[in-house]
Length: 66
Image (tube, rainbow, N blue to C red; front, side, top):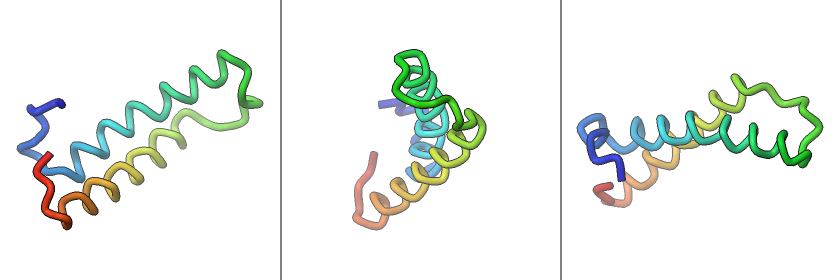
């Protein structure tokens, strides 16, 4: 998935995917009324990016390629 990002490494690839996915998920949760709307989209993007980068770093340490 998104093989064009492989040249940047797994932590960057996973960080970018999560950085875009977390605010989208938060938006959907707000639209469905699941949350109270108190979470910032900017903070969700930051937290998602950090979490994705850590996940990519762990996969890289395990020897995964993508």
